[in-house]
Image 1 (cartoon, rainbow, N blue to C red):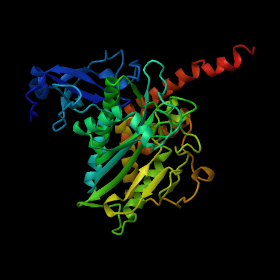
Image 2: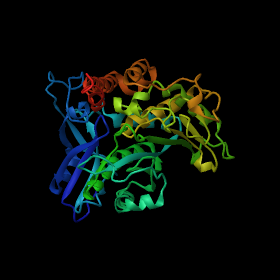
Image 3: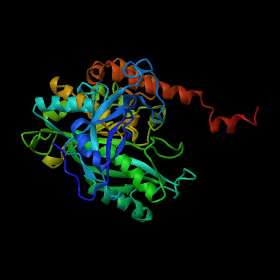
Image 4: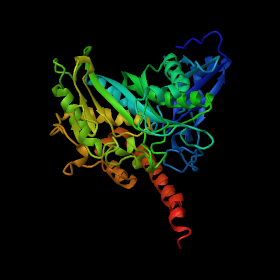
Amino acid sequence: MIDSLPPDTHTVILALGDLSGILRGKRLHVSMWDRACRTGIAMANAIFVLDMTCDIWDTPYANMGTGYPDFVVHPIEGTLRPVPWSEGTVLAIGEAREEDGSPVRVDPRGRLVRVVEKAAVMGYDAKIGTELEFFLLDPETKRPLDTGIQVYGIARGAMFEHVLGPIRNLCTEFGIPIELSNPEYSPGQFEVNIHYASALTAADNAMLFRNAVKEIAADHGLLATFMAKPFSDLSGSGFHVHQSLWFDGRNAFSDGSGHLSDVGRWYLGGLRRHMRELALLGAPNPNSFRRRQPYTFCPTNTTWGGDNRTVGIRAVEGHDEAVRVEQRDGSADANPYLLVAGQLAAGLWGIENEADPGPRTDGDAYAIDDVEAIPATVPEAVEALRGSALAKELLGDELLEIIVGMAEREQAFVAAAVTDVERARYLEAY
């Protein structure tokens, strides 16, 4: 079925998320829309082996030997929406297929589709809500425009309302339902909460949101970045994932009295069991791991608790419909599809195996030293991912090695760089 275009449309963006969750695609003249819906639009399969700078390297899926052939991107029915900040423009999310019509096996979105289908077979609809943090910076200096920390500050928020207001309102009009925004724990840093939706829609929304923020900020003369740790002396940016499973129209995580049910506890147990193994999906490069420091509200271990922001996983109880768990270790630069797919797969594993989440942490989780630590570096995370049976089942060997390959390349780039800190300390002293 072909989605109808608004009558004033002149441009259609057909887009999909790459390996890093960066929105890529093509802009079509409106006359091409019928053809795109019938036969798709060709794009080079290098999209899924690009790094964030668009550098490529040979992988078993795409390499110089195969010539980096095309795959075909088909618009996904129901994803078409006007772009409110670009008159006459609409956007549709695309599904990548090989020339023979089969799904591209290394497409991150496709991996989430499979996990969602597994949840459905088990009788569950996964609901996901996301919180994303980012910085708004001066595009010339690449530094915040304000100084000092004013977390939740109404006056500080008002300074940026000419940008945050359009972000909230235009994204909601774009089909990404924004609940709220606030200044975060650094100058120039903000958090936006996106209302929960079914898992695939929530991941789509997170990918589209990051691109929308960058475009809207640029329209207001600012640079938006979801880099995990852009400044050594300031807080990093996280990607928190709230999740629950619904069965026959009710929240399966609630026991009926607003407390976590057995299903919720087993799901939480699965998250804990696989949190270390899947850490690379939430922290894909060396900079991502720089934010994992004690007493920064970024978890360093696999503890869980109630309303406790020092733990790795919060169990939020209260009203039946609001009972959920929140995994807090992801960084803002994570691929939304891989992050959600990994956590959902881990939680479903927990239900299948009735995984006990272990003791609850009620105090300072950073002070606990007898709990499994989350990897603090890329090499640790790579080793954990490669050793994970769940990761191999979730990702398949090809995509797993592409993810690992990109992380190892980034680690090598960073390790080889001479930094300003080194020059400041050693240049004149020796």
